[in-house]
Length: 265
Image 1 (cartoon, rainbow, N blue to C red):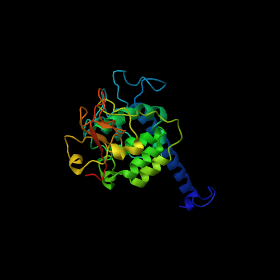
Image 2: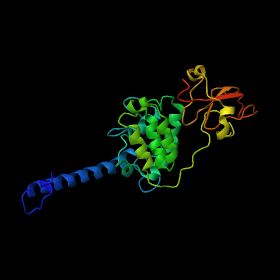
Image 3: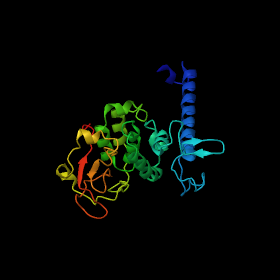
Image 4: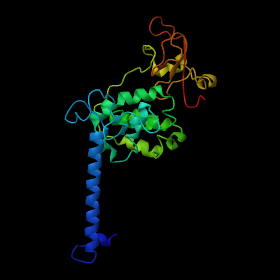
């Protein structure tokens, strides 16, 4: 290889010229792919990059693109987080040139909501990609904590395949600084539990029993995003990012709660 970069006037000049040509072709193909991905697969309705798709198409990505049709689904499923995730994997150094910050901030809320309502998002590794966007929009520490807590199997599943824990943490940790996207304090289909003390949640919502954790009807809470499960009261089965205030009347009535963890099952 050293000969390929020798002086052009000496031996190896043909190899050097070929190597420069390969480098230039690679740069051109990379730039073309980045521009095409951002133009045709990332959806915007405001700003200079808007106007590709009609406003009636509200998702932030295109899942499948045909000659005359754009679909928000994939060949292997129609859940929103699948369409979002497939446009983000794999996570490599060039990804930050593809996914600009403004688009990432538009994308994150709907991506996170889809993962929140899909219990297998963490298990199948799609949450790795969701948290890559979370790190991109300024919440690097939260994303790293998420990756450190994932079971190893998540990195060999459908959405996590190709991402090691080390690669994921590296990507999260190296996102450029940006003003943090404001995240909702509570994201749950039930009425808001009205706060709670995260530092003292062990006494309010102790770790869930194995029986509760394994209940497919009761436990639908994502471990990292909304782990506090209401186990008794009007909000039975509701999930919250913060501990429930127990015994409240009105919109946030939960009598008992517990915290879902990876170890509880």
